[in-house]
Length: 339
Ligand code: ASP
Image 1: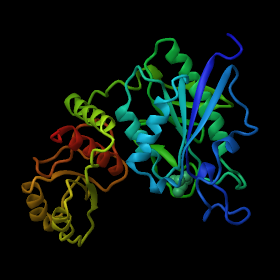
Image 2: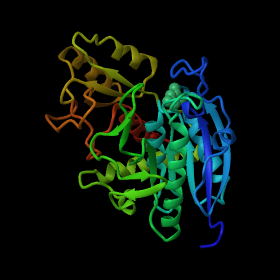
Image 3: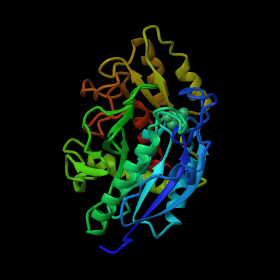
Image 4: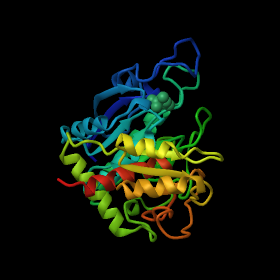
């Protein structure tokens, strides 16, 4: 292999991985996105035979992420034709939403993408960011080689030494490590001492699952394309509303009146809608609002029961968190929006 044969592009968006503490040793109350990507890379070991280019796309706390950051990220990637795989550094709070969005936009012929993040600021004792970045580069190098050999690519996430598909992982803990997990699928591989050990064939990552609904996935892809083509298109307003005992239905007509276009109901148990919400939900549907009912349970897909209007969306054969479902509803509305 020649001395430098792989080009990796790094695209930084900020987050805790680039954070600095406000007080020595603090692991909360820090400033996310304080350090430039060049500072994060300084002194790190890089994979052999790789050349890196790094670009600071944004320097945000990912709690403030918007769809225009996704356009900026994709624009930056498109404007960097030389790289063979991309590493994206990100905050953990909305990592799964960016991973989901990139996943829905991704085609197998495109360059592989690896997202990573950290739970502790860069100057914290036990900072996890440097190790995650080294792992992400090792994974990107592995994927770049596979893609150069003709394998289809995908969007991946690595933290805590685990590799997940961009579709599979969620942040499940606000502070403790490991903070991420995959509810239905488990990791696809591990990064160990800068070596990638695949547990499943990464070439199969983008294949739809046996329970995935092909037409719904095509709709999501069409919505993604429309969004990417029209940067100025208004973002569909979709809210998640959370059912509890005693949940007051008045929020629903208030949102409808304010112009909401889609609702994801975080229903009870197996996507159950409280009886006191039913009339408001029916009225929202009658007003043309798309309503998807899912569950506030955080582990596991609701099982189909009953008929619409209160059944959960069945487009995915695996668990999708409420944040991910909300994005899929945005894409569905984008796909069906009149030009
Ligand atoms: N609030 C931070 C962010 O999402 C949290 C983190 O990165 O861990 O940017």
